[in-house]
Amino acid sequence: METTDKMDTTDKMDKMDKVNELTNQLLDSPKMISEKLPWNNWTACIENSENRIAEWLGQIFRITAFIVLLTLLWSTLKPLWANDGAFWGNADTAGMVGGLISILLWACAAFPIAMIIRHTSEGLSASKSNIINLIFLDLPVALIKLSGYILAMVGLFAAASALLSFITTLDIGNSLGMSFAKLSEIGKMGTATLFEIMENIGLGEFSNMMAKWMNPNLDLSAGEAWTVAGALWVFGSFIAVVITLINLYINVVIYQFLYGLASTLVKWVKGPYLPFKSL
Image (tube, rainbow, N blue to C red):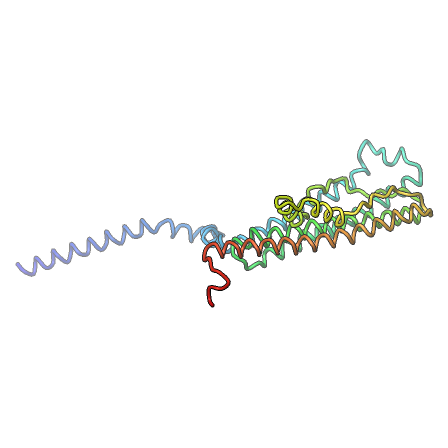
């Protein structure tokens, strides 16, 4: 009788083990199926999302670089076939040669501009900062540098086209057919923040003076080839590139300083202390 009871108990335990095993298999079925799906790395991607934000930002800029390259090439080469070939039929020989040189020049400009964006993506992808520093320091500084370098590159090619026009007496255009006003605003984030602070504390006149000093009026009219006015126009075009780069570095330094100041203030609020506390 005792042996029969033990056998019944053993059978019940075996049945319970099988039930538990089946239950565990059922509950683990999503994991088992997920692991068997080909190229399924979405779960790990989501779980490691915090550590991959820098890589994602870099990937966005990498894709943007390719799109910008195609857009610039399209807008630059479009006059060749736009308006039913009006470019080839309405221009005289000098105008056609100047137009072709302009198209070739600005088509070449599209590649270094795209590479500037690509280098920005590589810098962001390699960032090891935490999310706060990445979003509020690394990304804005990268955008300031990106806008400044692109504006300087566009200005350099514009200066080159002015020089070619001055030397060859041809009408060589200096436009990509795109507006860079937004880039100019992004590139001035550092000084714009500083000037706004100065306005709020009553130093508006000083901030206006600094703005005029950092952005001198170089809007010289395009002079004719081999004239003093034309030479000044070419010279002013190259000086504008130098000023763009100087403003870029000033904006980066100012933004980093303001961010460091704000970061220090936040840390002080979290743990306030007085300079003579340790005395």
